Amino acid sequence: MTTEQEPRSATASPAGVGRHVPDAGSAAAAEIERARTEMLSDARPRNRNRIGADALCEALIRQGVDTIFGYPGGVILPLYDVWGEYPQLRHVLVRHEQGAAHAADGYARASRRVGVCLGTSGPGATNLVTGIATAQLDSIPMVAITGNVPGALIGKDAFQEIDITGITLPMTKHNILVRHADDIPTAIAEAFHIARTGRPGPVHVDITKDALTTETRVGHPDTVDLPGFKPTFEGHPRQIRVAAEAIEKAKRPVILAGHGILLGDAVTELL
Image 1 (tube, rainbow, N blue to C red):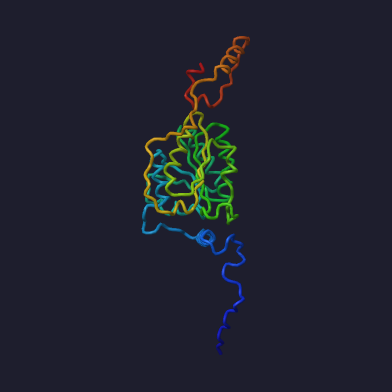
Image 2 (cartoon, rainbow, N blue to C red):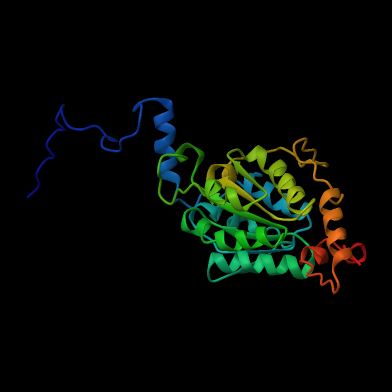
């Protein structure tokens, strides 16, 4: 026996009601709904046109990166989708994102190069925090890359959305939130420049999922000029004078030099 479905009542709730999206029916609300629907999809590159994830891989290679420590997850999957096409980048799969941050830290100490770690949004990003803080305290050059929810969902408490930029702000030299694919090459170039220049330290780059999946044709910068970042390479005159006076007055002076002396290749200057 079959029964016909009753016609929908004119007073029935329209689709989308109950989602509490501001300005329902507007273009902004439609974009939020689209991003919410696609957030957990594979988002594989379309027709293999160059997308933000490609630009990211290219930028890393241009910075001399050959090893990345990371753990995959939802919003960062577009990067893993294209990774196989860049054999120059070796990905070391860790068991936990904190291990990725500490591994990148150790890699930087041993190689004198910038370490790179990777995590997805939410808990994946927050798991990197301890390793980032360690790099900051020990002046270790590191670039921590995290994925985030699509730009339209930023600030909407979407699934696994966390303000990782705000969380890592006190423990990094610089923070960059990338919301457009065209901004990825410049952001990566600036991140590596800041991480390795002056007193080394960690830089965090947070990239939204739609920035990784959007097509882009933008090129890579040949130079980096940051007017607000001009570190000094000269010693502080007053600190040097005070130290010299203390050593001169001491009967048996003992100098406990920090690891920064080694990282800065300043052993000869110290002696």
